[in-house]
Length: 255
Image 1: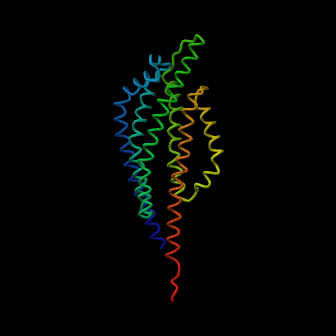
Image 2 (image 1 turned 180 degrees about the vertical axis):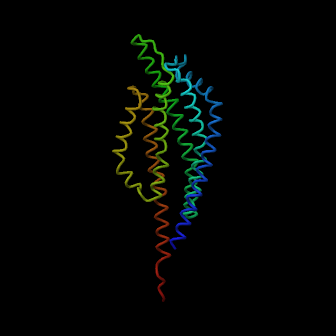
Image 3 (image 1 turned 90 degrees about the vertical axis):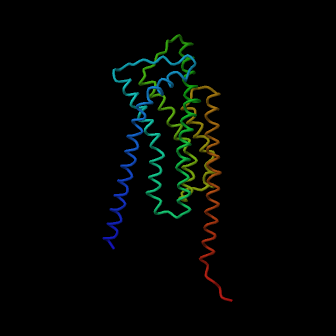
């Protein structure tokens, strides 16, 4: 018995290694693609936040190379994410039932698209408004604005990526509900605290502008309500499955 368990663990480790190797190979391939597209992406992102573009300079000899490699890695990471999620699903799916496999497989495209939508929202809404606000503030103070390319894109990543992660909330809630860690009743009870936390995060991430804060807060609140709704759907299905299982396990009463 112990020998069989050791063999099973060894086989799992071998399979995990193969899947990790596949993910790394895909990342290397997508990284090479990113090296080709990094230049046009950087040029686009320099111009887009404001109508007259952003005056960006290099403050360190390696700034341009570092930013270029960062964007190549970003393209590589985004291109690899669906593949990594797929291999993760394949690795854990053997221990799941058929229904659980189908449910888990749904998380792959949903997680990817929600992250991308969050990134786009963070860039085109939050980051663009933030840059315009800072530019107007500098202009009113009589300050000529020129940004170091490294600091500029570091600031962009620090602002945009957390928004993308926050947009994963419905997927995380569905997954935790499926694992029976949380349920819609708990989420409803925590609504006040969740709303307060969202407002605090919004005030931290966004400039002190009412319009920007509202445009950021409303989608996050809607995401939380969507999470509760999705959790209710999964919770009802779980209750129905439990009821059917209890019925099947009831002893037959002979007449």
